[in-house]
Image (cartoon, rainbow, N blue to C red):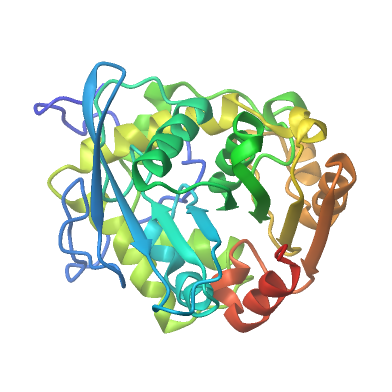
Length: 341
């Protein structure tokens, strides 16, 4: 585990990161950020929720954006970011929802972005859901619609399973966890090996991975902001702690599948799926035969819809892992059309 004296002497032979490919060193002009992403500005004011968890003082950063007076529709949306994303990455969606009268709450989960990154923590989706519910209690937010993207889809599913009475609707945007990678043949990677791999993360590697997976081999200049956000934390003064938390949360994603519990969801669920997505955690560690069967979102979307008792599927055949960023107008039109009113 990381300490202030950790060095990077064990990098050779590291296994490729589950969520970002490795590449040569980033450019000299890359901005750097500390472990709480200081200096990287979100589009909306960041607030802090202080609480205690597992015997430690924690601080959860969050956005709480209210509609203009007189335009509120009385509904609250809670947005859950993915592993390579932050609350700030939702900025386009927040603007659309607030203009439609929604109150929008978007936390940075513990271990991510502007929130606390503990050296010792039992990461689980149950714990992160509990933390989120504590935040909502603090803010007096009840009867929420929960929308999760990527890893946030796994968390949003867990939240809806734990708090069905508080969840009006569940929205899943290209969630990971629609299949059990370990059961399908992906070898387990230890946290120590994952940590060594995370230490090798670079801006170029992040960009290459996002281009091929998130945006279907396309790229727009505005995507660079999100690459700099991630890479800047790895390159900053707390880079080792950032990498350690990323390794811990990668283990959480790999070892805590929610796919077996979709049939237990009691809330209306909307699936928004870019079918060109090919995300499969740890796919690079698997044999070629196993790799071929993983990450087929055109099939996984339909399979998941059929597994959830009350589910609606909206597919985007030519989009990738992040349809809300790649084609925001189409995505938000489909989102608003299918939110329960």
